[in-house]
Image (tube, rainbow over all chains, first blue to last red; front, top):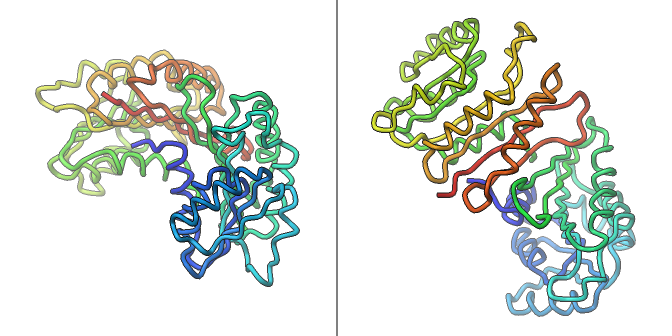
Length: 189
Length: 189
């Protein structure tokens, strides 16, 4: 059957990330993806989870504690600075990354991810991503500012050289209210 | 990793069609999908394979014979008349269907599928499709007339009631030369 957006995002990472790898949650939000990634890479693996909002860091920390997960570094900073926190010699090539774009659910809708910093973070991750690794972006765009970010991300990803990257778009086309969709980038070399 | 278009189309059907069911290849072309479906439903199942071109019927017949497949009815008629050939009491609810839209590869590029008859065929199949069954359309649109058909199919499918159908679009967004993409419809009730 046709997978829902979050289910499809997790399936893509499930099939491309290996146990023991370091992966990135670029927008930890309420920690759902962080918890998923933490289990996916196993005890030997590591998750670098970013969020610019203290509330998101707090919520994710709580969720991880409740689930007794200890393999996550929570980083209270914008994913625009992701480059500062990735050390190839320490983390190895990154196994995969997820972005959940928009605002923190059940929180202030005016604090949103923005196209320029999102693209900056994607560029930084592509440099350190393993061959055949994926960046999966779940793009919410119904809120104010969402349209602009959506367009910037689509512009950047659709211009990626097809000899070096595959980029797919997956989404429901008969749903009302600007449903989220997925853009996933696979690094080919 | 990110699945290619044909691989993804087959995966969707592989996960939703059961052995013993009757399925439809609305555009048998050179018989690749017909052969796939023939194996998918097994000896107890049945494939109704349509094409308006004699060359396609001949090519598909040859491919099926080479593979010793005997569970296919080849129907030399437009899929616009699909309704005439489906008898619910005989075939049971249809397990799934595939459309490969465009022209017959290595043949006359002026003989193409067209939006109005394609939509007519989709409507007929949706009526007899099983619950949670899929129609998977692989949409080639780089040829003359392809743009019109693409738009008609997208207009029809994106207007389907989300309470009764899920409709997804899957495709590569960083490839040159109008790459094909997939539209898949899941019947929810």
